[in-house]
Length: 220
Image (cartoon, rainbow, N blue to C red; front, side, top):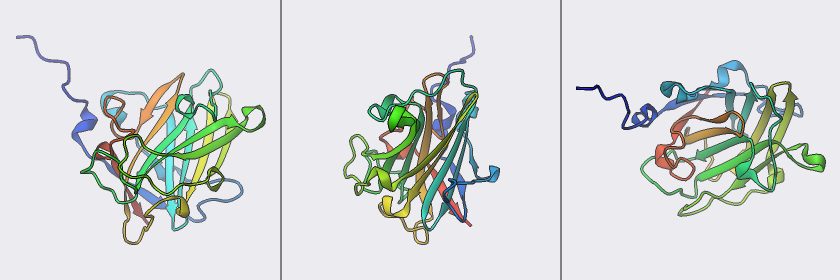
């Protein structure tokens, strides 16, 4: 009998991932965020032999969350348009401040943020960040003005660095003392390099289904 080589389910679907998110102070300054290598988040696509092209880091303080992304291996500049965020290169993060994994439609504690290294301002050279409501959500979090989110980016020869800060006021239900576990996933999307995700990949509806997200544990 010929052995079965095709997987019925991707390996990442068989696990629920929880990783530490380290406390960092100050979280954000005029120079951005300086998250150390110890703050790096894994991409569990390694379990499926998928390439990792982005160094993604996360940190927290009572003031909110910060993210650092370094994308390498590009031959072309990132393609970014504030008017077309879903098609743009950049970072997407999904955060559930209640870490609820038994729902398939987002609650008001679930957030989707998109951060781009360029695509805004004159000559489309400025970074950009915004909260977007999640498709099919039962409820939406409180609105957030784009200017409340802080972004910073740097061009590199073969990619870019993108830094982002989500203040506590932009996170419905943010309470690290009472709720130190966050439902979480990320996707670094690149038209040239593909898609790098934290937990489940695009075989599953991670963009709208909190049940397939992982967990960030806020630790000091």
